[in-house]
Each structure stands twice: as C-alpha cells, then as structure tokens.
Image 1 (cartoon, rainbow, N blue to C red):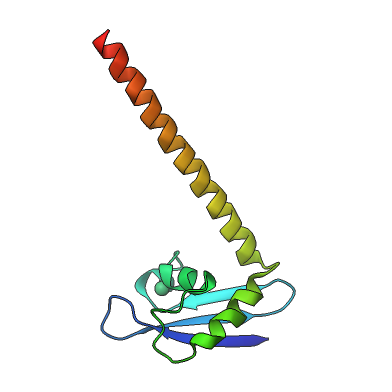
Image 2 (cartoon, helix red, strand yellow; image 1 turned 60 degrees about the vertical axis):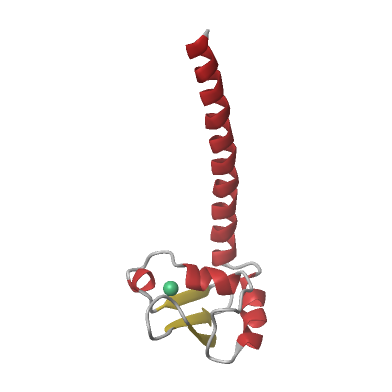
Length: 111
Ligand SMILES: [Zn+2]
C-alpha cells in the first residue's frame, strides 16, 4: 500500500488535506478534508490532482502529482472518471439539441 498526501489551498483560510491511497490491484482511494469530501461527495480538489493540476498545492510536493496520475491507470477511479466524461459529452450534445429545438419552436411560433 502506498499513500501520498497533499495540502491544497481551497476557499477556507487553512488548506485541505488531499490523500491518495494505492491499495494495489486497481484499488485507488482518494480523500479530501473539504466539506464536500468529508460528506463523501465529489470535490474538485481530488479531481484537479487526478487531472495532473498542481497550482493549488501548498505542501511543496507537486512532483508527486505525476505518481498519483500514474496510479489512475486501470483503477476503479479511472473507470468512474471515464463514465463522468462520457456523460458530460452526452450532456453537451443534449444542450445543443435543446438549443436547436428551441430555434425550431421559435420558428413555429412565428409562422
Ligand atoms: Zn475537496
């Protein structure tokens, strides 16, 4: 088991702790001490680090972000991130379709 911890400056005065635990066999865990993370909800702090972003890190170990990113490959979190990304693409497609249909509605209202 390997563990890497970062301190991340969020909206609160004191930084949040973001911890990644690689338990092997594709089991990666990610914890954050922000209010959303403490409630077991999605938060941007873990997502940003998994996305390779280092700008909010204040613990001086930005170089370890690449290690965490390498842990993603084949993990349960990678699979869940891909599902979210696919849903976001579908959402964008649906938004464009709603916009297109509203234009048709507006045309129907004028004719
Ligand atoms: Zn968080």
